[in-house]
Image 1 (cartoon, protein in one colour):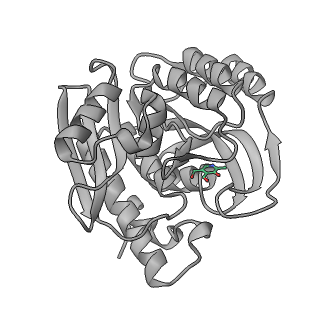
Image 2 (image 1 turned 120 degrees about the vertical axis):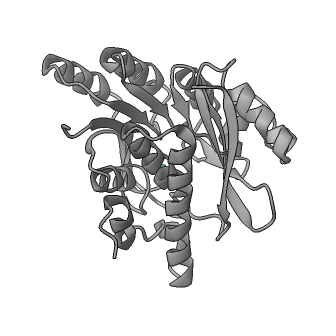
Length: 280
Ligand code: PXL
């Protein structure tokens, strides 16, 4: 089998383990070629560091799209995350339209915020645009904050019980047209995980693992990257979500056990062997 190829459209934050600095090693470890499309270059991510630099790459996106199209590149998946400007919504849509072929998986992680608040660079216009972009996806991976933005509802108004969360996942599926993996869902004290709606079959399942710590920066990116890799390799949605939740749990546990600074992201590098299948 040839090596699958994924186009990963996220920011590149030099320090702090999120977005592309997570997606590239994780997809590589899973045996997938990751082709990055940086939406912005930052010195650090925006959560917990002051004075970060921010280079907007919006004008590069159509040029990259055109060049890759001229090369006739094909992708098993297009996987998008943090966007650098509202204008990127239309440009990422164009990228998806250009490279979507039968069998191409489109994963949109609608990175907008956490704990009921938008990230510093996510304007209301970007939130609205992200909802439009997410409509074109095969799979979306919002946390509860992002689900509230996508549904135009208050974060505090979203239900937290199992049947209410099943309804939220169903509502996010747009009448079953797209799969949903709602993250940061805790069904019992001491656990966390995801509520999954699988558009192939319409089944809703919950995946739960041990809750370690919150906030832990970049865990959403680690989760969505492992899920994307698993789906590209043919796993059903629930199995991909289970693999992603378990890897995040192990990374979080290692980070907390070593008392590492949480704003630096999870200490995933020593655990990449779990994804290559070469762990001791
Ligand atoms: O992990 C989400 C994320 C991605 N990219 C940037 C961020 C954050 C969260 O703070 O700041 C730049």
